[in-house]
Amino acid sequence: MTAKPIVITQGEHAVSAQEDAVISTLLGSCVACCLHDPVARVGGMNHILIPNASYSTARFDPEGLNAMELLINDMLKLGAQKSRMEAKVFGGAKMVSGLSDIGNANARFVLDFLEIENIPCLSRSIGGETARHLVFLPTSGIARQKTKPRTTVPDVVPVAARTSPAQDVELF
Image (tube, rainbow, N blue to C red; front, side, top):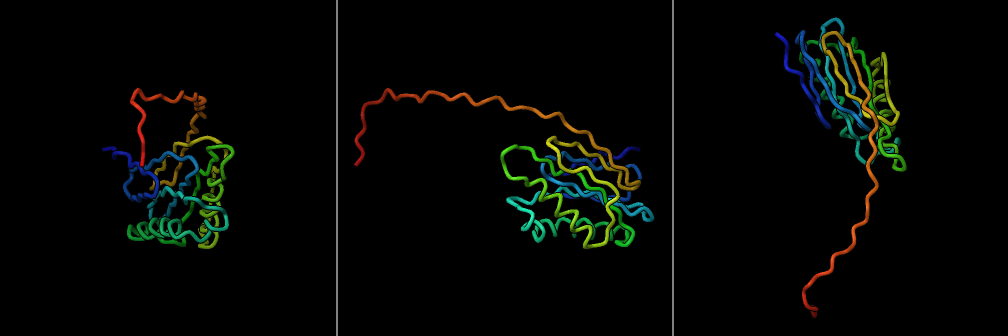
């Protein structure tokens, strides 16, 4: 029996020890941290966005810290041990040129957190300018990503202001 894929979005996480489990998400400037305990065969993924973050503020963001702690704690409940956890990090793209690079701040937050918590990051695919579709197999720790082609938004054509057929109105 194949499990239904678990799809997570911004601010969510999922963990599983089920052999046929699949966790997926779509990332732009957000970052996903995939954690895996190879002995317990438990894994999980979160989807982090630190709004309005610069690198200096992202390092101490309570939402980001909460997202990482929830993921780790839920894995511990399924038998994982923090000392055996391994990470893979994805996302953090700069989706809109000319705006702040929030994707970089999101990625730096996760990488710094992993370093502070002594969780090795086995691989990463961060930055760039394209979205990623990520699929994670939590019991094996296998992660696969597909980049999504960059789309362009057509130029906005100004619309002429409408004139009202109504009579003049006096405001007082």
